Amino acid sequence: MLTIRVGGQELGIRRLPADADLPAWASSGGWLSVTRTPDELSVVYPLAEGPATQGASGPWRALTVEGPLDHDLVGVLAALSVPLAEAAVPIFVISTYDTDHVLVPAARLDAALEALTAAGHRVVS
Image (cartoon, rainbow, N blue to C red; front, side, top):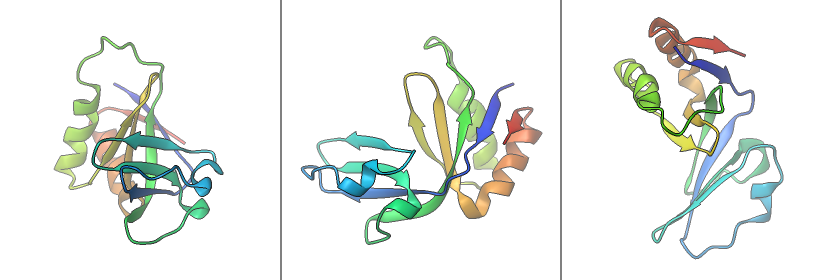
């Protein structure tokens, strides 16, 4: 059983060109995740803080596994993604050093929480 905390902010996900600078709006809120690959720069940010333009997706809500998690743990994401997939809830996953964050569409939050609770996880606000 995992304990999952529901984040209160609506989040956006924005795709930028791989060589783009990090926009100023990206670091003005409490949530920020940045991933650069050879093909893109992805930014997860508080939706209210950034533009809702082409390349943006949202609103999303974060479900955070209480951590820190040991790096030797196996199956954490499977324990979350399988019940969410069975409930037809899309996900966007972010892993940090301490824990995992599963973003779900805000419109599907109730279905996500119901699926995770039914799978035996503990959900806290």
